[in-house]
Length: 404
Image (cartoon, rainbow, N blue to C red):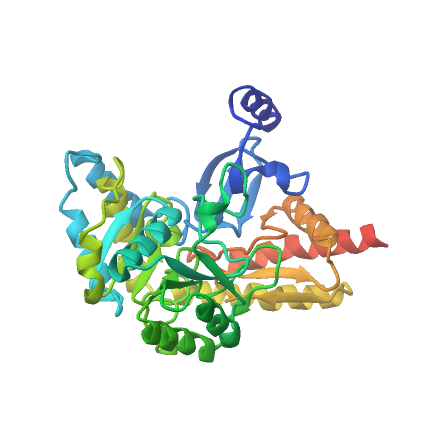
């Protein structure tokens, strides 16, 4: 099998054969490591197996793999140039689009990864306030730099010394955290909903969102929304806009360019001067192809109501999974927005049931994940969801038989 051969070769030239969150060794046994291609809402691994894709490359693919409008925009830009001595005109066009679309955005800065964006946002906050401390929810994922990586390997305690943790959705906990470092809070960084791995997702309570905004104002600190994972799948204007809560800074990436590597920080005029003082850059940060892809992606989501399409498909999937679980005698929890769903089994503390079920889904042509949230794309049609539900139904049956 090609996948096994590639793993053996990789083990000789790549530490561990693979690393990071795409390391298939940490999933259920049947998960492939290497993939050949993607089209729409489907992916094919190197051994030719086809899957309906509910991970969307862990979030970046929001319109479907190889979306024509995005690919055409990227190809046009590539024909002119990509990594040049300075950015192309498309950088200005993309920034203008973000400022027009996002009410809390008066300016935009670009980079490559979500970690770049969250780190850059905190740099702006510290430059603006002259303070050091950052309030962050316990267990929240904000990237893979030393200050935020979930693994301590290769880091020092000092690199996390300026973080003060609070419990998500608890204003009391947030206020208490702020009180411990009164006068030195540069920022409150928060995800738009609680999407920690291995746990049921938790939508934000509107009172918490508004309270975080009020506390940041009272402290003279920046409210930073980490919309890297949820951005462009919940609300194109920003994930807390429906609650009437506007951040000072927002970090974006993942779905921004339908798989092309780009990230952004958007911010308010009050922080423009601080942003100008940063020396934060990278040789590939201003590559024009990804910016052209991002512009086309965001315009397509806007023009074709991409979020509405994802909501309809996600609702159909959620309702179907509930019915199947009940029919097979399982109690399941489905949490998070329907566009960023996850399913867990009641009483499955060690995830053994989820691991078996997700592996069975894989065998039946459905790619999802046992302990990380999934992602919908605008390419998921009713027919695709119904075909996927045929696979998940077989997986529920196999799991019931396995458990006896």
